[in-house]
Image (cartoon, rainbow over the protein chains, first blue to last red):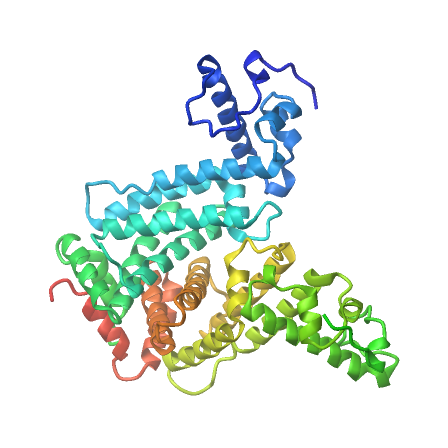
Length: 252
Length: 252
């Protein structure tokens, strides 16, 4: 690795306070923050193309055109700390994509959120895969907690979108289960070299939501009510639900 | 911890070969094998009641009424090796429960397999939960591989049971997704102190299978064919499918 001179702003020691908190030495704030963001962004790119095991701090320093000591100044905990910071950044970005558009039928809205999700998965590829598969050397209780935060945010946003204030255990289980199906489908998609068309996978997941809600409605009045509300919004005789009814008819 | 005298058979060094392979010193084989099994069984009980972080090798030795050196003689790799051996034993046991009974409708057969699964989950409680949640200190690429083996076995058995020789990507995705839903549901069940009645959860999972298969059938002729075959076997007008059709009807 080539040693590179550090810039003036990089001479500043890593902030002991979170970088969002205003710093007294105001004029140096932006460069420090920018350098931190650059290192995280470079790390995210490397983690996207290789499993975390195969990314070293030297790789990050080299790709960032920085020295190894500089990277350590920002991330004294080394690769593990950088990985966790990168993961936190990626988690925040993913959570921000859970915002549901205000136009279209419920199915169209769900499809739009899923498109955002798959774009994120495509972008983070190897890192996403290693993280969700477990057993990675950088996986700790802390990284698992970050992933759980994202799942909880997805659950909360979905329930809010369904107009549910207090979800009972069955409706909660339904939404959690569907989120697990989305995760699994995205991993399968990556595994198979993205050969399944993403638009088809997205439509399959929208249909899964309807079907899984129907199965839950058999056991839970709250879910039955939510499903009836969604179907009413789907437009003339909810065309996908009508097709689901057809394939469930053994007298065909 | 009280140090206890080791028995004659325990003086035998830990076998360097897998215990199933016949050993030349035949007369000592059973005691050694029995001791090994006892240690694993004791470890499984401890891992069932506490997360692996909170189980020490001393705990295992004490519960097994053995000395710590004796436990090390059998598991030179310490707690990690013992954990992996226990996990392998549990995984084999779980896989053996995937055998589908030969009587009843497809729904009844699936319900019977799920009963076996939930019995296993109840028995292994904390260990099962820690393992599937990720981020445990004992989790490694090896333990993840053991869990993946179980998932693959579940996939294989389910497809075989469905009479499928060569599953296309969509049918495979359906079965994998349903297995993920089963796992998630079992974790939720443990989290909520087993308050959801297990029979209801099992019936919910059977209904999920039918519903998820219906949603996949909209995208895949192979799944449509498998589903039609299952519905035909369900008996007069597949009563659960009929109820699913009803809740999917927005004109009610």
